[in-house]
Length: 119
Image (cartoon, rainbow, N blue to C red; front, top):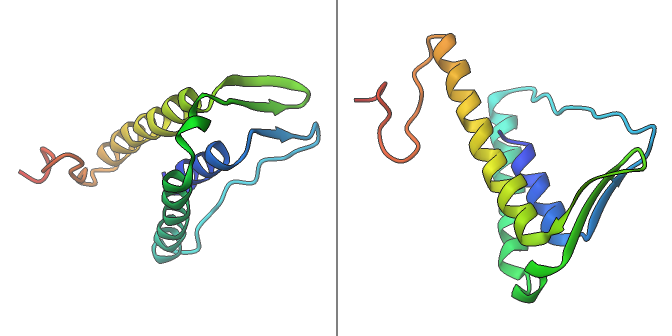
């Protein structure tokens, strides 16, 4: 939730493609603390917002690609990539986080107002 949306947004808004080499190995970010996680999210979401504000509206229709191991995984307009892989993907993972919190008996925080756990 803290890493993915910011990187996706920055890559989508500032690059025309992301290409991973055949030997690329994903290294997930593991925060040392809650404070470190929140600091990274705040910093990177500020960068992503600045990139969004700076984007020339005409660039929404430009092509954007993601290529991994020589195979094209995403080939679409910047707008559709941003909508599907930044916004919708974030919503999907937020829902997964809610399920995980429920299974751990941790109250789910409100998103668009108080959650059932806060009422």
